[in-house]
Image 1 (cartoon, each protein chain N blue to C red):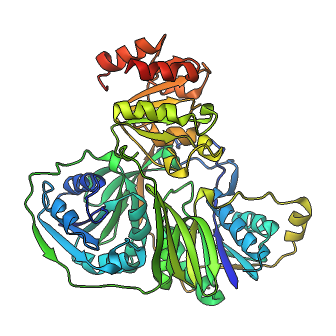
Image 2 (cartoon, one colour; image 1 turned 90 degrees about the horizontal axis):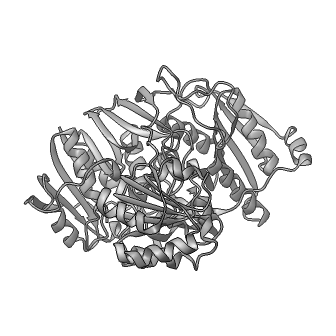
Length: 249
Length: 309
């Protein structure tokens, strides 16, 4: 079966986020960018499905400026077969991203679509669910295990208080949580090979989608700073402070 | 304005996060209607009718909603929600699962994890793992919003006397089914609603040592959490994880034991009222946010703390 994986280019998770002085956003000039960590897990899962003989082709798609081709190439180096870049320099909000991906799903007809549960920049946790709703598919969000069985897939989900397993008819959407797998690194020969894999570039207009952002960001601020407290010398002093000064126990 | 709040419940009880979502609805202002969708969920609906400030409770009681399957729930909520200006749920894993579907079905944006209401169309939410706080304005006619419960003080669970009305509609998308659940059994409070949380990090060395924290938790009525490092090391399950990729907590007292204080972890707990850090490394970044820091070997300090309580 064909698997579609969506990946997003975001600020590298090791980079310290700085809010712009004019409060219009986060400063991304000359900042290291990388594939969103949850998307790496999505790529890895697809590659494992191919290694198991469940998936036959892995198509990776990314939405964003020309530079997002770097993340598609990374996915190709990890084992995806071909890439589709939906090129735009505009801001793409979750609903529009879902509409663009829906257009790709209509064209490619994958049996399984795997996405990260959220991107570490916008932290929305929406696109996979929105895509599933628009495509009329079932969804297994926050997945820690994915088992394809004939024309259905069982997805074990990380939920508050434990794990829940749902059974979904294929085609279906899966969004990844941290424990699903541990992504591999791309080897140098595979990075070289990835340069020759097909990568098609399309515009939102090619897919028949007009971007229409519904949310306007009025301002972006730094979170309130916590003032450091005091060091206590012993457990008994700590207990005394918690009882009599902070009054929390 | 009228606001539809989707109750967080397990059919028999109303989860406390619902009280925080009603508080957020109060901050927006308008008539508040609560939807309880489940199976044999009469008790949860009854509890919802007593919540202060709720004017009506809608109950959709059907096997299709018994396990809160997002595919079915979203069809119901999108249909019922058409008559409201706002649809709100908690930002727990259930709300995060079905609310984006509701928004997509209504062709509107969804606003995740709000921590403050500025006005009926403007909301404040953290992003970049809490390293930045955005104020966003929505141009949609219906605002679909998930609420971070730690951002709003819970309304009273008592004092209301809302009318309870049954919803006959049954929506079954027919694409998903419940297979099984493995829920952690615990008499301790849930992490996200506990007033005291004690968490362990990589310094705990193994899962067995978390028993020391559990002993203190039982004395204080606290929940037990963990850092991502402790989860990644396999000491404890992922649902105990506090941080950017885990749970966001804001208890009255947060005790961090053997946790260095990576940005990832701080994003999940720095909203706590009082923070205590116990760590043998004096330079650990956790001490920069702690109100009370104790530089000590946790294997000596933690048993001593348990005895002192």
